[in-house]
Amino acid sequence: MIHSPVLTVVIDACVLYPAPIRDVLLSMAFEGLFEPKWSRAIQDEWTGNLLINREDLNKKQLDGTIQAMNRAFPDSNVLNFEELIPSLSLPDKDDRHVLACAIKCKADLITTF
Image (cartoon, rainbow, N blue to C red; front, side, top):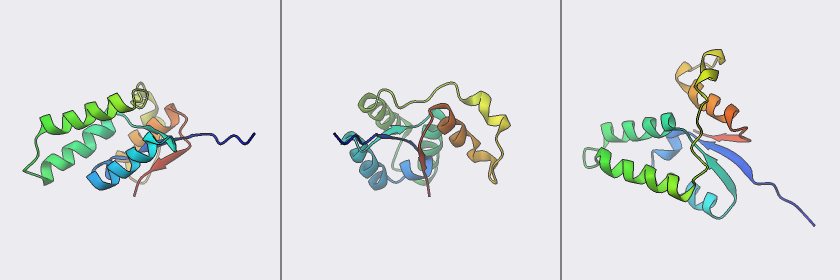
């Protein structure tokens, strides 16, 4: 019997921001190709940027999207990773929360641009 492990993948804000890419990734996850992971900080980052750039959208709409994502993937929201952030060093210190999230959930990959 061949066993193919499911990868655990943190999805960064920059790939959640564009709806077409978000939809493709979440569809792939729904098909069982990988287990998606994110954090509230990642969700806040993509929705905050989208609200700045798209006046036709509002926070309530985007909160609905986040709620739908969390319902579809109830084990995807990573918690209690913040204590790792100060110990991490990256060229862009604002990305440390993504790496901390990945470390906490023992992710195999981070999907980002």
